[in-house]
Length: 346
Image (cartoon, rainbow, N blue to C red; front, side):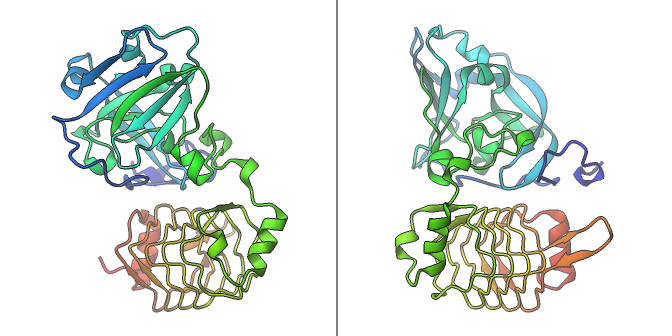
């Protein structure tokens, strides 16, 4: 049965897929391999220790079936993973009574991290080295990663390097840099930190700006930009997440390298826009005018180019002349739409 056959298991705002899109960090630290991979355990434990991957795999391994839910809006049903519960590993370490949180750090250039309440991690988190019966690929976090079912996937860390027990929480990389919610419960749709929503004043400053330089390096969350006609078309590198651009007049805009994840462009004029290198995960382009726009090397997991209504009506983007290349993560139904429109060639 395909993932689309039944949607009763889906959390709100999610689209089912049989694919496993690559999301988050793409490349581990140079030189990481099965031979060099180690996992250090520190913080509030009685015994500090560093495990080699071989030592981790020598412990009893189990198989578990889970659902994966990505914050960008896709979910994958019944994924088989093999590894071991975090609780088994930590039972050997003598966790201090004062420990309340656990932080995971990656073998990556940025040493990106995530954290969870210790009780939740002990109940849910696994150290995983296989999915669907094959070793994890590097792009999906191999040789070893964490997986925490019941939380958005950014709470599951690729390329596990360190496990640290803490008395106080330290919000992770995506929470700090991308304004993601620290709880991350898909059933409650906790995608973003609501305390960081753009204020009306910030939104108005953006609307009125003639130079967007001061806004680069900042995340503007849930800004209401419907009908916007910016004074400058250079919107490159901006982080405008979960924003509303409904019916905005943006023809010819330069969105190169922008992060527009989960934003709504329904009905917007996007003719000739350049989205090269942009993060468009979870974006809705339903009803937008994308004629002659450019999307090269873009992230498109859970991106929608149309949406259907219960009454049978379809709101679809105009895609004549849309130049799409090097896309990543496009889900099955949206790929079929673009293929039928002659945009997607493979």
